[in-house]
Amino acid sequence: MSLSVASPSCADLSIDENDTLFTAIERALDTGLGRVYVRRADGALAGQITLDSAREAIRAGDYLAGMTAGAAARPVPTVLTADDAREGFGDIVAPVVDGQGRLIDIAIDQLGQFLPVAEPYLSHKEFRNIVDAFLSTWISSQGEYIRNFERRFADRMGAKHGVAVSNGTVSLHLAMVGLGIGPGDEVIVPDLTFAASINTILHAGATPVIVDVDPDTWVLNPETFEKAITSRTRAVMPVHVFGRPCPMTEIMEIANRHGVFVVEDAAESHGATYDGQPVGSFGQTGSFSFFGNKNITTGEGGMLLTSEPELAERMRTLRDHGMKPERRYWHDEVGYNYRMTNPQASIGCAQLDRLDELLAHRDGLARLYRSKMDGIPGLAFPKAMDKRAGPVTWFVCAQVPADKRAALIQACKEKAIDLRPFFHGLSVMPAYRKWGRPCPNSDLLSRTGVNLPTSARVDERVAESIADIFLQVLGKN
Image (cartoon, rainbow, N blue to C red):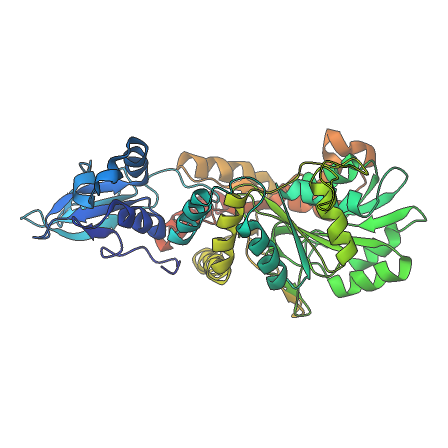
């Protein structure tokens, strides 16, 4: 099923009583609502199957006897008639029946329960892959899905080699040590980023050099980068924050001229481009995260990309305790256990199959929010980037007056809507104050930025509700 801002239909959310339990599971995943309704042969509502009740049936082994959807169906807590009000019925979704109890429609209220800022978009494809990985018995750090995921992700992102790892943070650390960066070296990093970026520099024993971001693009400015270079500068870490690509052509020209390594932090920007080239493929290495809120997820997980074969081999060796494949249990240097598992990679392969669909859905949400929130006082969406940049939507971001942001977050919380502030700038936090610098652009963004819910559950009515909250808070003098 193609993700869109439209709600699933009655046909999407219902199955016949003779369908299988696994049909119910796949349909419940594809609709994004975690349940399906079961129809009898005469069209009457027989009950519902939720992902939770399906899990119970699987744990109990009920499927061994060929359990049908009709046998697995549970009572439905809320059933509406055509004359019932369709809003505020206390759940996300409820069936609508006629006078004979036949299923005729589905009422959907995405605001009926807590709305998170993000959640993974999983479908039957991920389900089939992870079952296959489990049945292969390759559930550790070897298996065909890992090799396929590394190769296919590298191909899609424009690099020659992929090194799958356990999370995005360790991929950055692996890049640092793989390039030989350590004590005495300086690494330039933007102030507006998640703490993992600077943490991995410190884990390697290097010295972070924090710089401000551009006020319009929110990312590293090439001129700012060049001014920060010293005789000790060994690397720069451009962060493609919130899916907005750094000007990598210019950054690479400066880095090459000064002999500086480029380690791209592309954790939030799968699929973004600059000058037509995917981010993560410009520098010596590019690092991606597959945490549950990312455009592609494996639950936890990460990937390092490089087009340098010797660097790829070194990072694979370091990833696996410092052991080279040709000589097991022999360690030439201290390594790490940074490996991804085959089941994780199986989810990643399915997510990669759906990448265009997932990116299009989030871009559609950004357009929806803009259409519903246009003209709200004090609200500003990100400025359009230069045509050379091809951004993607990770979270739908906006800026609001700093003195009203807390009230906005609280007002959304009271409606069970998760509205998140931007990251704090690195320079203001106690852990990094030693290396902090005045960063007025980052400071303003961190005090005014909000991340809107960017979930498959956001539809037109949700966007309108959030717009109403913003108008109530920001429209006040």
